Image 1 (cartoon, chains in turn blue, purple):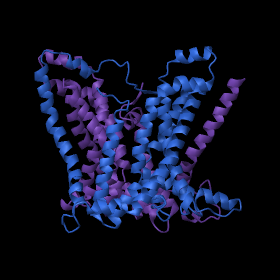
Image 2 (cartoon, chains in turn brown, orange):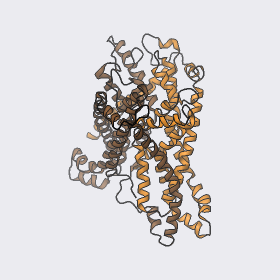
Image 3 (cartoon, chains in turn yellow, purple):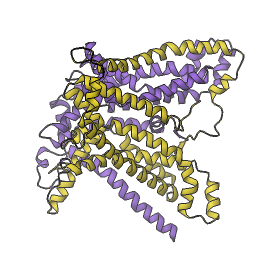
Image 4 (cartoon, chains in turn green, purple):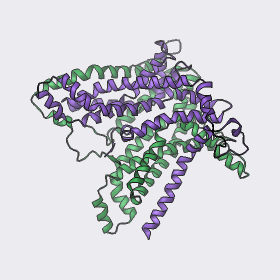
Length: 310
Length: 278
C-alpha cells in the first residue's frame, strides 16, 4: 500500500494509443466515438459555459437592466476594498504555501529516509489522509474549539496557567495567523503524501551510487531527489494556489472575514459584494475578472503539469 | 550510532506532528460527549466526566437537523449518479474508441479546467439562473450544480478505471460476433463496476463536504444540507459547544468512513491521476 507518482516519461503506450494503430475499421470506429461523445460532451460544455456568458452580460448592465458598458468593471476594479482583499489573499498565500510545502517536503524526506517498516509507513499514509477528507466546515468547528475565548483549548490553557486570554480570532495580526494555521493543519498532509509518492519514484541505484561516492544527505537531496520532485512541486504549487483563491468555508465560520476586513480573502469579498450588498452588477464584473484570470492561469499551468496528456 | 540517533529523532518529530494533528480532533470528540453542565467548568476538562450522547440527540432531533442529513444524502446520491452517468458517457468513447488525440486531450483538459474555477465566481451567475428558474431553495438546483462540479473528478477517475480493462477482451467479444452494445453491456460494464463504485464513494464524499453552493442556493430546512446546518451552529451568537462539536463529528464521520474504504482512489482523484497507488 504505497502511493506512486505517475511521472510522464517511459510510460507504455496507452490502450487508446494502441486502439488508434488498428487501422482496419478505424474511420468507422472513430465516427462512432464522435457520435457517442459529442452530444453528451457538447451539452456539458454548453451548460457549463452559459453562466459565464450570463455573468458577462450581467456585468455590462445596471440593476434595472440598463446597458452601462464597463461602468461595473470600473466600480469593481477601482474599489479600494478589492485591493485590500487581494492584498490579504496574497499575505495568506505567502504564509501557507511556503510553510505547507517546506513542512510537507521535510516530513516526506524524514519518513522516506528513516522509516523502513511498511506498517508504520501505511499508518502514516492513512493518518495523513484524515485532515484532507474532513469537510471544511467541520474544520472550522474543530478550530473554533482551539481558538475560542474561554472554552477554546488554547485560552483554557493560558487561563489555567494564570495568563490573560488571547483573542486569537479577533485581534488583527493574530486572526490572519490563526486562519492560516488551520490551512497548514489541513493541507500539509496533502503535500506530504504527494512528496512521499514522488520520493518512491527515485531509483534506489542512483541514490546508492551517490552514497558510495560519499555524497552528503543534502547533496543527495539537492542533486538527485529534487530533480524527481520538481514536477510534483509545481503540481502542488498550482493546486494550492487554486485552492487559496477558493478559501471560504473555514474562514467564514472562524472570523467571517474580520476583524475589520483583515481576513477577507477574495472569495469572501466576492460573497459580500454579491450577497450582502446585493450588488450583482459589480459582483458579476468581479466574477468575470476572476474567471478570466483563472482561465489564463490554467492555460499557463497545463503546459507544466505532469498529468497524462495522451 | 548516527542511524539510531536519526531514528530516535524521527520518532520524536513524528510523535509531535501526530499530536498536533490529532489533538484538535480529540478535543472535538470529547466536547461532543459532554453534558451542558460540564461546559461551564472553570477549567475545560480533557475527558468527559459523564459521557452523554445528549448533544447528538439535541443536534439531530431538537434542532431538526435530521432533515438536513436526509437532504445531504439525497443530494449527494443523486448528484453522484448524475455525474457518473455523464462521465461514463464521455469516458467510454475516449478510452475505448480510436478518437484522435486532439479530441481526447481537449475533453480531458477542458474538464480539468473546471476544477480550477473558484466556486464563488461561478455561484454568482448560478444564483441568478436558479432564481429565474424558480429553483431557489430546492434540492434539484443543488444536485445539478454538484453534478456539474464533480464532473472533472468523475471523468478522471473513470478514465483511469476504464483504461485498466484490456481492449482485447472487448475485441474478443466483437470477433465472436457480439455487437458493440452487447460487448459494452456484457463485458465492459460488468468489468468496470468496481471502478464505478470506488468513484461513486469518492464523489459522494466530496458532495457531502460541499458548503458554499448549498449555502447560497438554499434558505430553509427543506433544502439545506448538513454542512449549512453545522455552519449555523458555529456562527450563532451564543455557541453551545457540545452541540456544535456533535454537529462537527457527524459531518466528519461519513466522509471519513467512506474515504477509508476507498482510500486507494482518494489521492488519485485529488491530483487528477498524477498520484496513483501501486
